[in-house]
Length: 379
Image 1 (cartoon, rainbow, N blue to C red):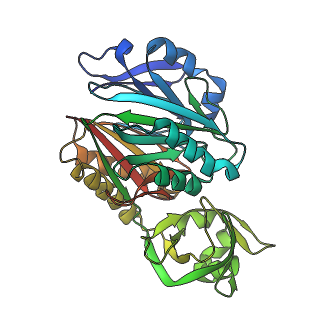
Image 2: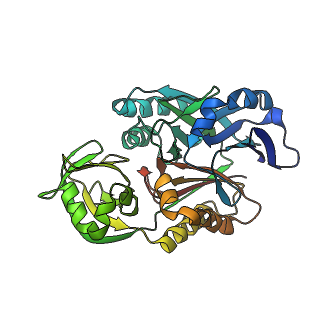
Image 3: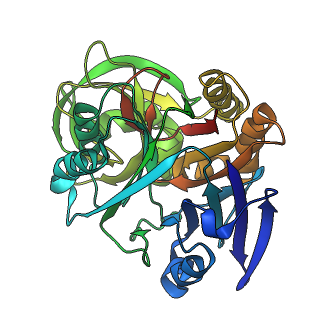
């Protein structure tokens, strides 16, 4: 695997790194992560198509771009990959709203499924998709040995629109599936949150898709405010500090859901992901040191599951973590980088949802407020 990285900043393209022997003409996959307004105003695809004529080019908007050991804004970070033994195949689906998400997942799986399929990377619109249903369909249709990971595109902290494109200028409502094929590709995973739980576990008694109305006998927002205490006056901004832990089934591992908005009149809360009736939820709170430590743990897990230092690490973290950590945000990337060492190429972005197994051999899930890492190496 040979890699070249470039960045677009201040209206100029600058090279970050280039492996010896890398060929623009032989690059098979290009991942371009960029700030949404910049992608709207500048046609990055036109430049990338000329640079990498044979590559599948995926472009998506972000809530922050990751490369080397830090986090950047108002840039486009491009990672071009020349695989030696791995074949690449892509598919794109357009959706109008979240109700089409399950069918989109089925279609992606059908298009990519082959005997030697090793991994699927999903880069999805972050505003119109029901990520839980998208992933449910992929899990049902794809063999258990196939790795599934990726993320939902971001739009800084604006939540106006997100952009995704495959071999074109990115647009709204698009989902891209990337299939990686061959027995020589090794893929590792790590996903950690680092949030502290508090209070008892309670049942969701009334909800609709991602809107939570009642927990037990209480209106969701009233109960939430009771637990927040003095922080309740700072809602909705304070909600980023207090996400929700959710178990969809009694035997499920808990995953995290970010609160996007609250409705004072309906006493409801809207989340970045589905909260089905009957799920069990628990309140969580931020611990800055634990958030940073979680990034290191995710990196360790991703390295352990492939057995060696990876050639490429794809880091997808949550916009909520970025807003909570503030000036400390570089620390979670540095923590992962320390685990990988200097030879691993690092790329990634801040998202509206992370896609990964919770543990290396588990089924894929939609996560919020996690650092999710996928690592790649070729034998």
